[in-house]
Image 1: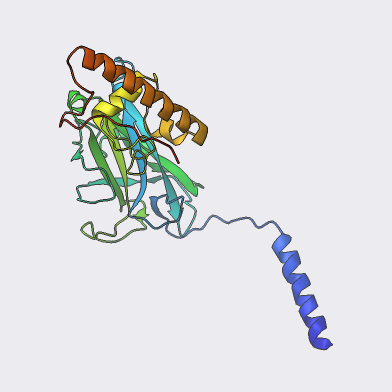
Image 2 (image 1 turned 120 degrees about the vertical axis):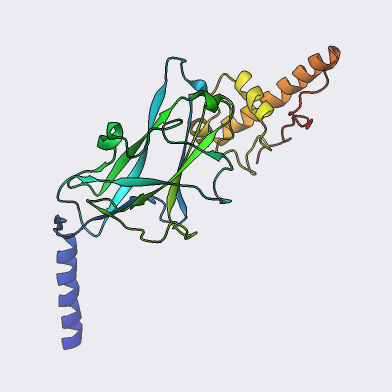
Length: 265
């Protein structure tokens, strides 16, 4: 009986303590920082984003893409300058593109003009850093990628202290272009089938939609079914017109005919 009373008392204490609101103190020890893995999947590429000037007005010459970062070990007691480094790697988990060049397709990370975009602010557990992309004419020919990791700065250390040559280093990827390129979520399971530049152009022309990462990510099953039905019918009509003019079926540059799956599952 004494044991039961003791256990009940212990449970009551635990219950009271767990219901109290606890204020997280600002730790005076060193802070560490890294890109934020919001899914906690411990992947090497923990964030990937795309920016395509193709859909923007010709007057737009640059844009900023934001990546989430997170503080480790303590909450920063002041603003810290975050240091980012470009990585040039070969990996099957990111798109196979040429690496972007600093000062050409993006503003170099050590340029004073972007210093204020790379701050871990005082009291912030989660923050963001900005990458400034430049609309260079080379992006009209092909997309480029910027693979990045956080490294030690004079003010805050990177939480990932592995050597840059270590394949398990955590990084983020930014894909930039001024032409149609394969969105990262148009993969081998995509409901419109295998990616191709001509197919991509076809769906843009026949929908007046961007068909970039954000647009694709917002599609529900009903909308996907609608687009698949629409594109199959309009491809058949376009091919019939092409055949009548002796052009042959709409195909990719390598001669592969454009096709859409019969059904969406």
